[in-house]
Length: 290
Figure 1: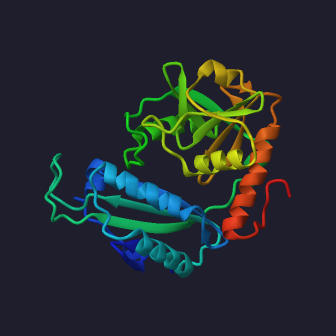
Figure 2 (figure 1 turned 90 degrees about the vertical axis):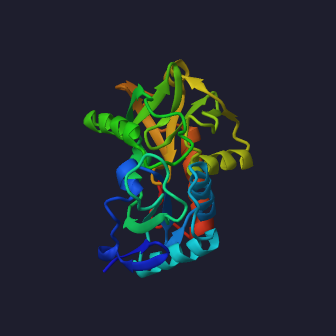
């Protein structure tokens, strides 16, 4: 038996139902978060929950629970589902109301749901690297909000999947933004470069952990826009996300990156990232370079 959270209570997942007039279903009127779990413990949980609140505030949804209560609830959900390695998916919508583009009245209560899923670490891909392709960024201009409206991301990811690629790297004009479900980094002459956190990209939690690791270990970083030409000429390319961690990119549009192997800076960041996981969640059973 598995369990889910519905509106502040843990219930059997099979009983967790929402109304057909929920605005998340009809308009994508809501936001979401994905939190990684290692050894039964949430990784960077406060960072994820604070981003969740920022996203709700950005679209005018009032979170009906405190962060402290949500944390306790999510911890209880992990225990009840006996989750050791996986994710928590959590979303909130504006609630159930008769279909109307304008927001409903304030007496409509938001719908909050969460559930767990077992997700292993992609060890083989982390060791060997992945293939990517490039495609136009056709999304809206508030990518900093972790919105349920993901159709642009889905179309890009599907294009990658159909071309036997792990991820699509997006660009606007000649400037690289991010992946369809990840942040994108390049390394040139030992300097790590990634798009600054603004309205054109999601402020990735894993991205921020990587930047903090770089700062603590004196690895040079530039947070700025970089171009498709810089991407093509990079010594190393890697992606980051909650489930992909620090993912080496060894091929883009059927062109080899560097020597076709994960580069030294990427490898170093993978090692340091694993150390950060172990600091928060305990020793990893399956390490990348074990």
